[in-house]
Length: 369
Image (cartoon, rainbow, N blue to C red; front, side):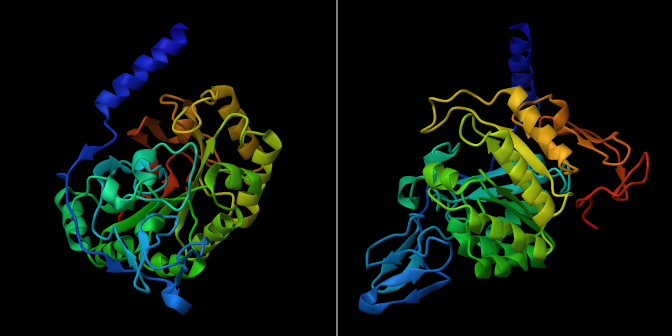
């Protein structure tokens, strides 16, 4: 009990010392819909969207599963272009991206909507809403880039909700940011078709993909999607040379079976490489899964051991501030090369992309050069 109280106090102190975000926008804005990308006309003024694997077929007046793409008189429009409902300056570690410009701030934006229906969503108030139901600010791509520069953020993150649902906004912002020398990152569910993903990769630098489970049943029951398209997206990102990290939210009784965890880790090793960072994140009862308990530390540590045993080099435990698995360890000598306390970098022992103790190269992007 004393240990539990200490950890709760530690978490509170960390939140005060290292706040996870800083609001940078006022509230309230509207704008006109924009013509969407990746769709085709069908008979009878119907349209079919080809942005994500749902391939929604829409009659005039209907919206896609994402809630933000609407058929208006036989043309598909996006309703959230330039209308973020959230914009913050975060530590890059919050995404979480542990192998990309550690210790730097990232300008983070999101709009309402998502193409999944995850019963455990932590941002359900905005992801499960349409733009008319959220308080938005008019912040076009050029202003996003200006805001990133003004706040000394070397990168922009498309995050919080699902960035696929504001693809046009993300795409145009990423192009301008790339031209201005600002990096682009996203935290995504990976539920996007290969063509738009490859087009985005021209301007993308890093991505953290939620690999939410490793069975089709899990995705259908708890997410409203399918597993295979997510695995395909991960392969596309690696093929395109994007730095990839993976987050797996470990949910008790739903995706924590050791054999399934092992199969997932083996797939990551064999399909993406053993140097792809994997984050096992602690589940907290939220939204429609309030009946389940938080993930035990023992379950997370068991999952991490499985991943390390199959040969993955960089395996982390998230949502437990102060745990030793927040740190990055050199795969060769085993010493701590990045020590973290929550989202704070306490020590960075990577020099010229290598462990300063043994000279082993550490996978990642460690500087802007």
